[in-house]
Each structure stands twice: as C-alpha cells, then as structure tokens.
Amino acid sequence: MIIGIIPARFESTRLYGKPLVDIGGKPMLQRTFESAAKSKLLSEIIIAVDDERVYDAAKKFGAQVYMTPKDLPTGSDRIAYVAEKLSTAEIIVNIQGDEPFIPGKMIDEAIEPLLFDKKVNISTLAKRITSPDELNSPSIPKVVFDYNSNALYFSRSPIPYVRDVISDTQKLRMAEFYKHIGLYVYQKPSLLKFTSMRPTDLEKYEKLEQLRMLENGMKIKVVVTEFESISVDTEDDLMIARMYFEKNKNKL
Image 1: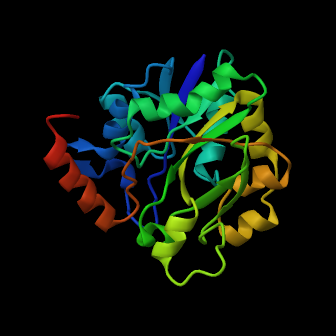
Image 2: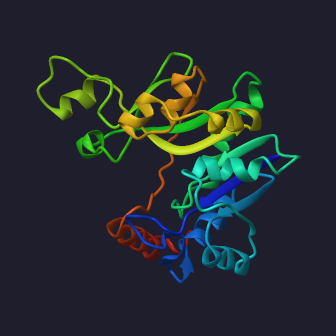
Image 3: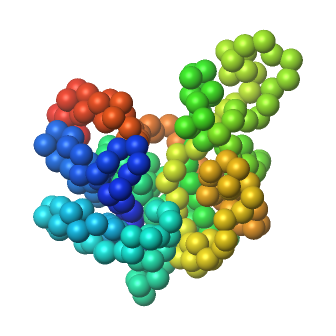
C-alpha cells in the first residue's frame, strides 16, 4: 500500500497554531488533506499530530489521525513513528501540512519512480527557478542532481556557482537552477533507516535534514515538476494563500 502521511505540529514558531489557521472557511490542514486526496496513487492518507486541538479538528473533517509524542524533533520523525505501526504500508509519502493547494498530480509524479524502478528507495521533487528572488532566497532550498536524476547536494545558497557572470539574470540564462519542493516518497525501510540516523554535519550547517541521507550514502531520485504549490510558513504566506483561494476557489 502507498500511504500518504501529513505531519501537523501545532507549536509552529513562525505561525502559531499553523495547522488550524483559516483559509476560506476551513483549517489549512483540511485544505491540505482534501488536495492530497486528489492523488490517484495514494491508497490512504493519515494525519500525524502532536496536539489534541489538531487531533479533534482532523477527526471532525473525517481524517484518520494518529497522536504522536510532542518531543519528536521533525515531521519526518513524526511520520516514521506512524509508519512503523502500519504493517501493510510499503511506500510512505511525506506530505507537508502547510501545502494547502498541493496538486494531486504532483504527488503522483513523486511516487512514480518507486513504482517503475525497484532500485529507487527515495524520491522528491524540484522545479526550475526562473526568478532572481527565488534564486537568492535562503528560505528556498536548491538542489543539484546528476545525469541519472540523483541528488548531489541541497543548499540554501544558489547552486551551482556560475563563474564569470555579472548578474543573476545572466546566471539564470547560463545555467539551470532548481528549487527543492519538500515532498518525499520512501520505501518504508528507507524512511525508518533515515530517521534512525543521527543528524549530520552538513545537515546542521544548512538546516536541511535531507543532507543526512546524502552524507550516509542514501540516494534520492529527483523528479522535475512543472507544478507549483504554495507553502505557508508565515503571516505573509497565509495572506498569499488566502488571496489565491479567493481567486481560484471555483477551480479548487
């Protein structure tokens, strides 16, 4: 079975009570759940929470919910905690709870490599960067990958470094830059292996947990997508999400 798990942590430092913020009359977590449910490849979706308020809200809109310990350090640990209890789960999809409009087709794109190639244990998504603002934003991780679409490195800095250019516009013309989209698909054993490892040096420097996988020799297949999604981390992001909903509510 292919199980999507949405980790939802109430005590967000930048947006308090993030899973329950209202977007168009529904909690953001419900918007994410309903968007993910449009995937054609997911067998079921589970929400992993750390707070009774989020648990009750998810139950109210009909989701399957697991309560997880509050002291788990990351969303990946929360997902692994639930995945370990799912005896029939073969593939686990980490769906970020702050992506209220994530396209179902985008999730399916990330899942497909694990279905077509049994040697692929982990996959994720990337989208080409076209604007200098995205290129230079440390809040947008970048990824470079090899000719087989396996990740080489992730960074908050613009990578690759392009010598002998004057402007960001030139950089974007001369080289391809990709932003990382934080949706992961795992063969279940790979998820449990990853979350059992201690944080690594590069992970600590960049504050990017996927570097733990690379530092330990795990391969991550990168799928380039044309789909876009809105991530809500701050009050400004929430305002953008609400405006997007009002503009597109008849299509969602």
